[in-house]
Image (cartoon, rainbow, N blue to C red):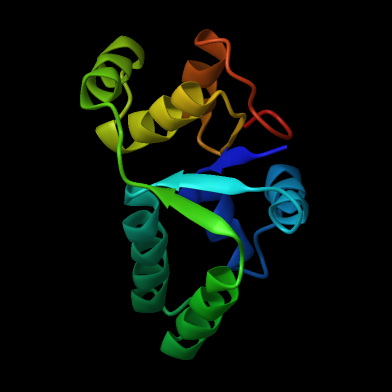
Length: 136
């Protein structure tokens, strides 16, 4: 079943010392299911990698290898959010606009959401949206 993937899940895949059941489940599913992300995902994932390079947690080579691996996954980027709905969700649930964009996409497409972000997961449940994996 297709799903919306939050950057918090994908970021877990980049680090050997981060293991979460929801991230593992999403990685299994991304190999078989269609995955959709909002345009912000591209920036968020790369920002996590750059921040961790600066902290000495990963190298530039690790970042490049990880991004090559991710590029081989069938992840479609949605670039047409409903701006009004994104803002409404951000206000209603006190989310960042970035997080609200994942929820808006999940609601618009009627797809479950894979996230490790507790606030985003709570907002999705409040909107009666399925959150994949273990509760964050």
